Length: 279
Image (cartoon, rainbow, N blue to C red; front, side, top):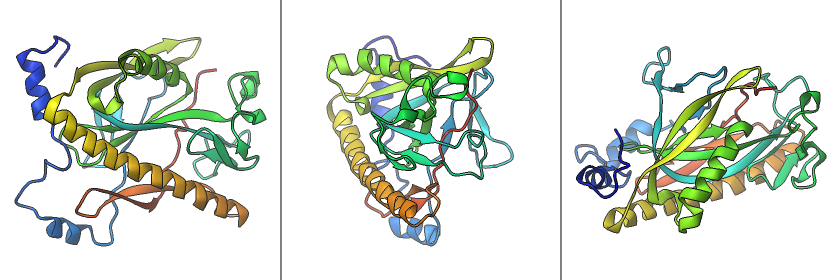
């Protein structure tokens, strides 16, 4: 369904019907009911990657782990996005059991070995990757996309080949209009590329803008989430630094929990995107 026709009835109806976490709850289930069900459990972000091999469908975790859902596009509100990066010892980049030597949750400061400023890190320079291509430190960007009717956003990891398309889209759709990403519903698709190896890159399109009362509701939701996620990233960096000093693994992360009043984040595993990139 397309909403690219300006302020028509279809567009206005879509804006009014987009369900947000603080207003979507079924009145039949109280916070106390949900808290009892969740006692001792954790709600984690569903993680979605750009598929490898030129595939044009996203794989989404479903209710049956053996039968994931597939979608050609993802639609929702980007509540927040941030840079990240990981550096593995050469040869262990795709070993799920090996933690990276160094990682960054903001693209600015690396923790581990070598650690320090990402801007001057020799492994964050072009030409240091395998066969002298790309970077030894894998730069990614994490988008938190809240879909209509969901309580938690999905975590979409953009590999290096999809960062430029997102940057270009952000500049045109948001930066030039002085608009925050949470003020609009966007669509993320896929495009097949071939440079001798087939691979997929993300495409982006704005579907419609929120306004009035709905924009105020979205802003409140996004600000709550952004505050929590920034606290999470700061805590994650601090915990990772302690683990490195103690010689422990730096492969850690966080998940969301429901405290009855909004987003709440606690520790658990969040792994990076390790899909093979084109040569």
